[in-house]
Amino acid sequence: MSTRILVVEDEEKLARFIELELKHEGYEVSKAYDGRTALEMAESDRYDLILLDIMLPGLNGLEVLRRLNMEEGRVPPVILVTARDAVMDKVSGLDAGAVDYITKPFAIEELLARIRVALKLYNRTDTNSASGTAVDEAGEQEGVYTWNKLILNELKHTVTYDGHEISLTNREFLMLKTLLANKDIVLSRDTLLEKVCGYDYIGETNVVDVYIRFLRSKIDEVFGIKMIQTVRGVGYVIKTES
Ligand code: CA
Picture (cartoon, rainbow, N blue to C red):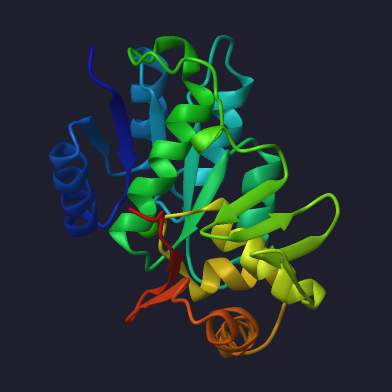
């Protein structure tokens, strides 16, 4: 049984693009171009995940989400698509029960990664793989993230490389943790900014570049490694070592 995703997006070209990318990944895709149709489809059919744009004609995405949650029965995980800078949308979206959100414009790789994560977290019962229960990748201990000889311990709030302690500010620590917790997912500057500075941060997104530079000078340069990779025009990623 293939995984079914409902894509709700009124920009037909974008909807088509997402559909093609998702099909390429092996998902079964249905599309709706407005909120009312989306709601009807979600009520009458079974989906494993809904990708829901907020700005829709008629019934907007948040309203669709609220109505879905008033229904009886199981609501599939919903990932909201929000416009850039629409801070209130994100907050009320998460309040209304969305499991995640992605900001337009987004890199398709980030969307695919978020979909994989949401499916893994919220559809555990019907996975056909053997890894039913969520053991962290590589069986990592909770709150402990590793890369090469680097160990970040969230509970102790320490970072070491090959036993050498690295002193980081709170935001550098948070930035590093976010990258390590999302290994192989390219995180955009906007995403990193929100994770590190919070929803209400008003300022330049290039503060992200500044923190990355600090991290590199404290870790990559000191230990002669290339941990944090730049993905030109998109953002940053720490890749699993092969
Ligand atoms: Ca829209």
